[in-house]
Amino acid sequence: QVQLVESGGGVVQPGGSLRLSCAASGFTFSSYGMHWVRQAPGKGLEWVAFIRYDGSNKYYADSVKGRFTISRDNSKNTVYLQMNSLRAEDTAVYYCAKERTTGATIDYWGQGTLVTVSS
Amino acid sequence: SSELTQDPAVSVALGQTVRITCQGDSLRSYYASWYQQKPGQAPVLVIYGKNDRPSGIPDRFSGSSSGNTASLTITGAQAEDESDYYCSSRDSSGHHLVFGGGTKLTVL
Image 1 (cartoon, helix red, strand yellow):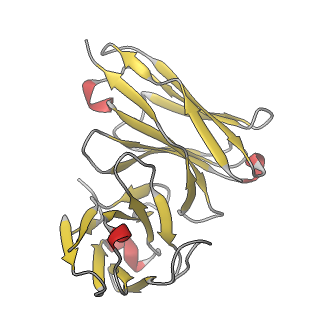
Image 2 (spheres, rainbow over the protein chains, first blue to last red; image 1 turned 120 degrees about the vertical axis):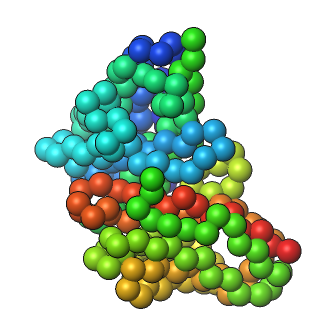
Image 3 (cartoon, one colour; image 1 turned 90 degrees about the vertical axis):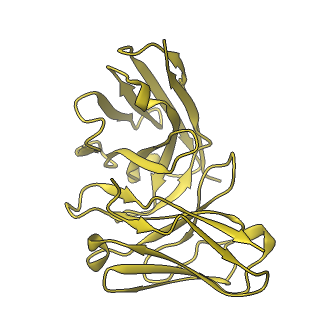
């Protein structure tokens, strides 16, 4: 069965950096695009970034563009989110998510990792 | 601000039918996907495409679309359907994903 396990969350000061990882299993990782989606406490879902199956294209929400970088290592079945210049408003649970095929449907989500930006 | 608009809250009597809507210009070009999220849990896909359900999703969940509005219908709502529901689709650029603000469904 499909499993997505995020790690790397924690508490970081404003202006700091953090790298999230998502280990995937149960499917052919190198054939699917991957998303990061976040959810601030008590708020709705916000799409953060997407990377194509081969890493050839990456897309970012305006709110994180220039600060966050999505990448993947298909040999390790892992997708990453490098987060720099963190702000208080980046505080959220970050979910790793698998794209169903082409199109914009997410069919599997990880359990999420909490990132707290606070001094 | 979200490019997809949902009513913040909707209620339905147990066993009755409820429709949750999602409005946005991008829905004229792209299908919506619908996700159910219970407190403290990750979202779960319930409807995608024209009206497709992943394996394991009850057939009381259905989807439809007309113009700039997508709808999720629950026919015969159950107590366990009480959740937050989010729609999503591509945005107008076609490269980004966008979510609606979510609808909190209460089953009375």
